[in-house]
Amino acid sequence: MRFWQLIALGLIFISLTLLYFLKQRPMSQEMAKVFITLLPEIKEGRPDYICAVSRSDTSKKLELRKTKDGWEVHVKQKEQDFWAPAKESRVEKLIKDLSDFTGELRSSNKKYLRDFGLGQGQGLEVVLKRDGSHIAKIVVGKKGPSWGTSFVKRDDSDRVFLVSRDLLGDFAIWTNEIRGPIEVRPWMDMVVIPNTSIDIEECRFESKAVNWSLSRQKGDEKDGNGTWAFTVKGKKRLISQEDASKILDQFFPFYARDALPKGEFEALVKKGKFVYKDRDGKEHSLLISGCHEKEGYCLLRDDRGYVFKVDRAIISKLKSPGSILKKASRRAKKEGRMQKR
Image (cartoon, rainbow, N blue to C red; front, top):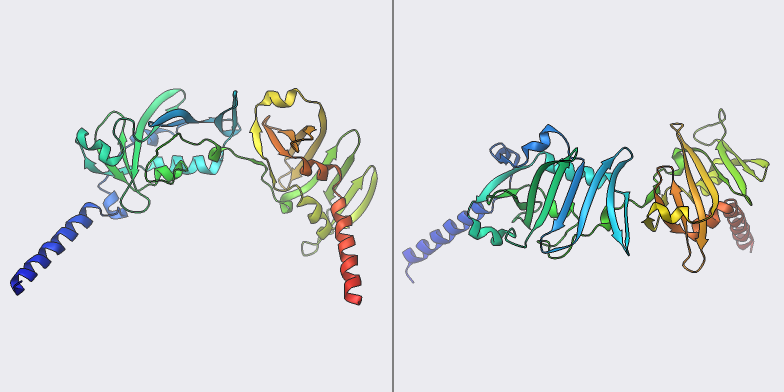
């Protein structure tokens, strides 16, 4: 092959490479200035209802709604149909990603929709509402050519846009496109008590058989090492910050196995009540039911009315919170004897 032919082939290769990267170029802040805003309606007001469903499998759909207590997710499992608390941070990220929604036009021809994962029976359909009124509907197709991008179109148009948002990732879909039903569980919030032990001022457990309380003593804190009053069956003693933290760390934060319909709790006998107060002075309470011995769980209801399934072991700790101090004491004595040998 002659030298000039090699040069010509090289130039052709470079030209094709440049064309490819220009076509697949990632988006930047500068380019965003000329992008088309896909959802201008959101700028007029945030949605308070979001529904997403896979167009390839409509057996499950994700429904989110805003209430006075925060966002909720609709749950259907084993003939049960109820609303459970949703992960606020996940919902807020989704709304944020949709609020500044601009895209670069990639196609206006209906016959190319399948190439972008937006043809008949393809994609993730997302409906947004506010105060019961329809805001907009979009369809999310395949992930884009560069990281954190997606192909999207409005439901009422065949125009396809490349947007700088990983919208499938927002819905916990990590494949290149959605191929089955959307999963609801990743949106359920299983945090019963979000606080950590350092945020707590006092707590108490009340039941027919056991009553105890633990409260921070004011006025004697030095370098964060104050004392706490630990009262069990009417007998009060002062304990150190270290021992108080050992007790509190058993319950703060507090996670559940699952969420259940509110009616599940009403049918059971109430076995106790756990109350705690945070540093802002706000008091919260958890009502506790009887436990399922064989499966090892109990039910509790928070002050918002949500019902959770929790490990029976946590309830046992609530009934005997000081046992952890006895275990620590025995362990320390054993270690002391070992060192003397």
